Length: 261
Ligand SMILES: Nc1ncnc2c1ncn2[C@@H]1O[C@H](COP(=O)(O)OP(=O)(O)OP(=O)(O)O)[C@@H](O)[C@H]1O
Ligand SMILES: [Mg+2]
Image (tube, rainbow, N blue to C red; front, top):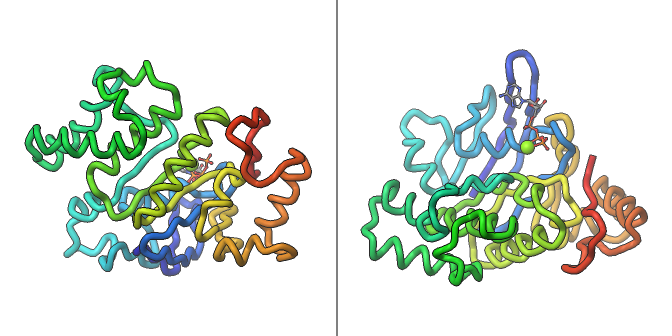
């Protein structure tokens, strides 16, 4: 569904992505872990063309990003993006936040936009909150509204950039649970995080990015296999030793979420 081939990206003279080659299969979840400044957000931004690349190729759903014959607007309708900061409109109710893009962006009529909004809110367990303003919701609920808003547009791909970084552990776990259920519904997910402990149990594929380079990548079973000398395994082992607990914290675990970097 997404394929990077020898991708390079510069900001001025600074090389922020170096020789990135990566494939994300349809209906799988790929998690990119790395410290601050590693290039995670930049990498995600290249998928919908918001961050143009300087060398290499990126293919999305069989079309090359940046190809003059590919209409970026069409491509972007297939790609939903969720950021750390939710970006909900504070003066609109939950339902109106979701309907806005459906009516103004996709041109759906009121009845259809309400139907879709309710369907996604129900899927994310938020239907009872449809008439509430974002400020009256917890951070985890707001992030789930942001995800519902994205899903209502029926994208093939979801880009999640640090979706839990602004949340405490309980809210973060709530959002991880919502993302886990999406992954089992056939949507292709590319997610960036430095909270590796939250996602290593639900990722299909893990990528370790450092200073713009992929230093490790592989299926979860492969890179996290017991005794595998992978960097990710070493990180997780270190974090477990620090926290004295398993990979993902229990929902009621108040200890801080382990982070990379
Ligand atoms: N618009 C920009 N202009 C110049 N440099 C930039 C720009 N955006 C990002 N960078 C630089 O590119 C590098 C990668 O940044 P990026 O935001 O992709 O990292 P990140 O892994 O997402 O970090 P974080 O975990 O803090 O979000 C950093 O060195 C950053 O300073
Ligand atoms: Mg970032």
